[in-house]
Length: 515
Image (cartoon, rainbow, N blue to C red):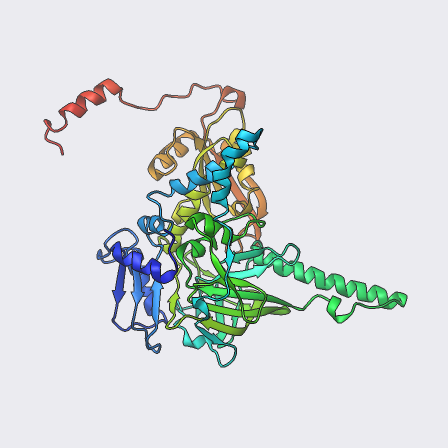
């Protein structure tokens, strides 16, 4: 059964022994972040498992009665619990089954598809009249200062909302998008909106700017020719409506970070993950729908002609992302549950909670990569490579130069275009074993021959690129080289013991005195 809301999820974590309730007073300014950083890295050796437990802080300085949930996704087991599977491959298998569906060729094929179509019908969001997020509605006299929003690192520009589900609407198609973008708190009623240029919400913003610029051009042409300018109702608004949900059930929160195609709503993805529709309600002051069970909802807008300095912010790269100009979010209404639980996360030097979320994305969406690049066997995005700095890919090599074809194909895929370094190995290399990868890559390459460089888009968080958002990338072909690739020397066999001797030693192992 899907989790009804964040509180149901917290109860499940508690039952599973994955939650630590902390009643000692803690400060949301730096202190919670330092505690969480130590726990997620097992510093001190007291954490019960890799990644440590989820934590529910119940005594927040200057916020009587408030609670803060953090590190909810911070282990492999909790990611499985969040998506209600024993292994993340189960989700990947479900995706694969839907992708393998072929167009029905006759009546019998259509009948066979009915159960799958019925199952798909369960995924679509359902609009309801009201929900728990409407228990308290505040159209005025509201303040962000009432919530225990964290400052995570000493040189952060201030407090940041770090786990928001930001809802926007495509002005052309009307489709909603749910993304996750940090929000720097400027004051009690305004924040930054850090949607990087490649994010879907940023494209919604640009679409509105283009429409507004187009309307201005029409007016100029009309005035110059003596024609009629656009009426006020025909002119695009200078504002973009935005809603922010904080404290949703785990499937919705996770869906906000997945690299979904722009035409697929994250509410639909969440429904697929939870096997139950996401219930949404209409906002009070903007034309958007938000998860009905969210703990906190912020409604408002960004002005198309307003930018403000945002950052610095201690980021998942392990370094501070530098200040830059971003849109400003103005609140018009706040709704929330009674005694809302503030859900948050911190990022910094890995491993941290976001690393486990990233690995889940890697596992779940591997079938989609294989659909586009079928020779891929497996991929690994090591957490130390912060996901966009290093991708290790194993392939079933069938023709000369295929490794380079794969590199270029990866660089053409959505957010994978930002991958700074791609290493391609043969299918017999376990890409999840960094030791094996290191051994075989360094043995298999001739650097001048096997390393290629290219130029293109770079993640805006990359502080080393020659220009913001633009720089070089590196691909390494560590596959075995063929004569058809100009390699005419013999390739040595890998050292492996024969199976007969291994079986003999297996039988004698205990007798030899080894456990």
